[in-house]
Image (tube, rainbow, N blue to C red; front, side, top):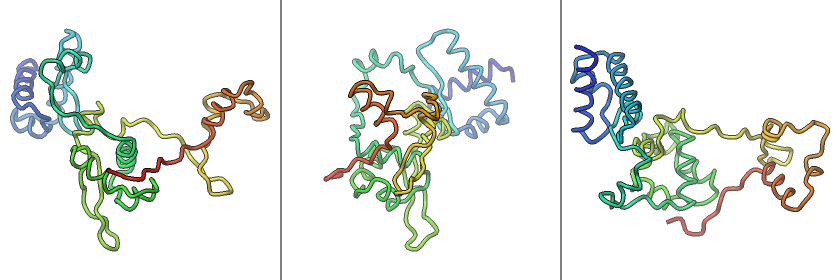
Length: 225
């Protein structure tokens, strides 16, 4: 089977499916190896990019989906996209970030990190299909664990968890408080003998320096809905 024929079949499958299609589904349909499917898809991606088309193929975990380019969202929304969009509160975003960076985390662990009850936010994220239950932890009580879904990858435009931004490095000081380690030195290249606060000439500068060297505290909510 020629490469162009493979690309045409894959394009037709992705268009007709209207969802993410797993690589093994394409392998079965075309009777091709994984390497051959990936080669055809990557070539098809390049075709869309070169032609400046309104469509693109994205990776969603171990699957592919044909969709419109984000650049044209404002034009599409006014015509066809009247669906309800996830309305995520700060609490929900915090919880979602914790789950994304800690696959197979339990509800108790989430609440330990956030410092507040998170039942409401977890329920909302499940309802929006941004997270899912991933199994049971081998621990007393067999607590359930959570992870992000393919819908999370699709909405945030990433293929897998490895594409998440790197988190700053933290350490505990002598008072068991979280502090940022080496961030200031790497970003600002401040001389070891220089006092950082002495470089702040105005109150705004001082505020900026303090914001950089103090670890953010988890937001607290009175009513997690």
